Structure formats: structure tokens, C-alpha cells
Image (cartoon, rainbow, N blue to C red; front, side):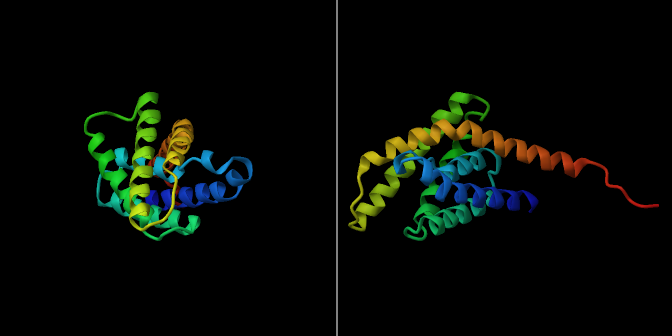
Amino acid sequence: MKKTLIYFTLAVLFLIIESTLAQAVLPPLLIPDVILIMVFYLGFHRVSIEGVLITFILGYLADAFAGGIIGLSSFTLLLIFILTSRLSKIVALNSLLIKIGGTAFMSILKGTATYIFLRFLNQEIQFYIIFPIAVSTAVISPLVINVLQKTELYFASRKSEPRYTPP
């Protein structure tokens, strides 16, 4: 339960930074998809119903902050989570190439699924925009994954510390 709250807190923090600071500094096509990186990480470390529920709620949070179609991010992020959890049975998330290449591939996959769904709804969207977002997501992925790993380690070490009980 504590780890779930950590993910939600980090997701809200990342979404606030993404929707304010990143949009003021970066062009819209270079804003990385940090929630996708979190779901990619969850696919390797939380292969359970807990991971599915966290992914679903992270998608709704992303939709709420973006102001888009509610449920679209949840659907595409669940697809990414399922594929990543399957991938985790083959490779480990300990290589820089896996972190960068995996998030770039999953970002392109998410962008393609979003494009297909939006075209199905007759909304105009350019296909080429998924590639710069995939590159920026891949570049920042090692940093975000390291933050997630260090946060988990910090709270795991605090849990194992003996608690002081007064005499």
C-alpha cells in the first residue's frame, strides 16, 4: 500500500512538472511522457494485479492533467504494461540500452495506438509527432527509472529499520 502511494505521489509530481515547467521550457513535441516510463518500470517490477490497477489509475491521472479523452491513456498504458510485463520474463531492466530502447519502442507503440484510436474517432492528428516524443521519453528514461529505484530502496530500507519503542 505504501509503495502504491509513492507511485501516485511521484506521478502527480511528474505531471505537475510536465504540465507547467516543461511546457514553459520545452516545445510541445519534446515533452517526455514520464507516466509511460513509470508504467514501463512497473511492468518489470509489479507484475501483478497491483501493477494493473496502478497503471490504470496513472492513465486516468494523465488524462485528467492533459484534458484529453478520458480513458485513452488508461487503455494505451495498460497495453504497454501487459507487453512490458511479458518482456520482463525475457530481459532484465539493468541495461541502459534496455531502458532507452524499451521506452522508445513503447512510446512509439503508445503513440501509434493513440493515433489509430483518434483517427477512428475522426480526429485530426499528425502521425509524425510520436517520434520526437519517443526520443525525448527515451532520453529521460534512465533518470526517471533511477529515481523510482532509489525511492523504492529508500522506503524499503526505512521499513526494515528497527523502530524505537519507549521503555
